[in-house]
Image 1 (tube, rainbow, N blue to C red):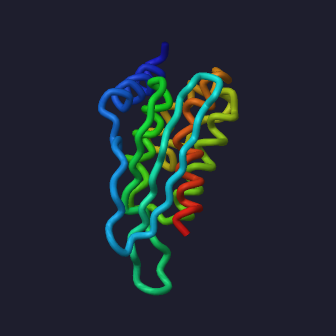
Image 2: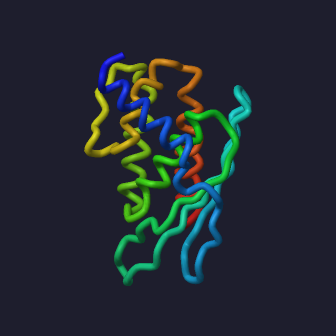
Length: 154
């Protein structure tokens, strides 16, 4: 295992244990919010993600105020949701969709894409997961839920 692979593994294990954003929050008044529940029938992982958008001055694009979630599943799916919950706040809708798209591309690459650490941040740690097709759905579960929740947030 390379030093980089070891560092990535540490990031995943850390997020699997401390789980940023775990526990669905109740949206505050005046916040746009959306929620999505996703289930992976292959392994039984499931997650519900709620995205809350902050109110912005007229004409400004709303930003993610909070991304919260609750779920049951493997370390990879829970860690991926935690990384997303830590990364998403402060992003505009377009920025979050770009991040989700980059994460999806990374996971679909089967290890052929070098992760853009500047764009992905800690999500780059999942590059190794892309080599294990059965685990890609685990890593994407919360991200797919966030994409749908963002769409529902209006």
